[in-house]
Amino acid sequence: MAGNVAAIVLAAGFSSRMGEFKPLLPLGEAMVLERVVTLFQGAGIGDVRVVVGHRAVELEPIVSRLGARVIANPHYRDGMFTSVAAGVATVGEEVDAFFVLPMDVPLVRGATIRRLLDAYRQEPCDVIYPRFLSQRGHPPLIAGRRAPEIAGWQDTGGLRAVLAQWDPGARDVDVADELILWDMDTPDDYLLLQRKADRLEIPTEEECLVLLERVLRVDDRIIRHGKAVADVAVLLGTALNRAGCGLDISLLTAAGLLHDLARREPDHARIGARLLRDMGYGAVAELVAVHMDMSVTEGEPVAAGEVIHLADKLVQGERRVSVTERFRAAVERHAHDPAILGRVATRLKTAMTIQQRLEAILGRSLTEITDTL
Image (cartoon, rainbow, N blue to C red):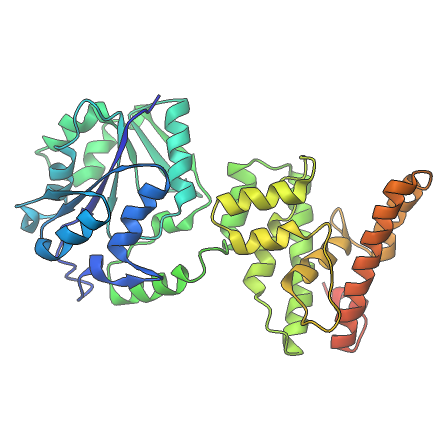
């Protein structure tokens, strides 16, 4: 069990390739240093230690204000590993495990940190790496007992070389987070991360598939259904955007893929939305929450939730169907149960209302659009 976990944040370098001092750069609603420190604090890690060197006088009061501990590295000019060693040298026997994260990787998701912590608590080992697809990323979670060897390392190769000697006892943990691989070394990198920081609530298609296939291990039939729903949602959204609706196609893709991620659970729309909200995917959670039941207000602009709701009703399994065909089996199955039949009728009416709204905007039947798939 990992009872006491620390995080070592590396902020001592010159930021020479960036041309500006990385820790103080704005990124989304906070500066880079704040984002990295609060990443760990938000995951329940109170012991955050920030290694400073270059422009330390500017960073120290910020680190203190954030409730983290300042670690001075007088040898920061000699390379990043001196900061690793300085930070790890402060790890005592009271620390069960610790993260090491450079300032260069500032947008790791909180869900990734929590997943690594859970993996370590279930089965402690020398090193746990987050892995996206086949690539290891930042930050590794390292057993506290290895701290003296890291702090005393005198060979070449830096932290990667130290950790490599423990690979037989290491473990890779799949995470739905491509940002474990995103470095911020150059101005171009920074621009990419700035754009990404504004869209953290929407996972990429690859992140969605990793979440379904490798993290949650969702049944393949459910995944295939999600892909079919996403295809229909994107087709509808693209057509609606040509008519001036301004829908976010990436959001529709993610919500289509993930709408049934909790399909095996009772009240799966609500539970799926809660899971996604906990992972930081709030924008997608809002759409997943209404894919079974929702209210539609006439006269209001078409919402993304309506598109997902209807796309789900236009797909049975992986097959595209009409709304009435989608509901036919449920109507027949519950014909002798007025309570359930009433709910089915309400859902059918909602789907038909949305379909009529969309067809009025598009000036043609949805069949003409979906038949192009």
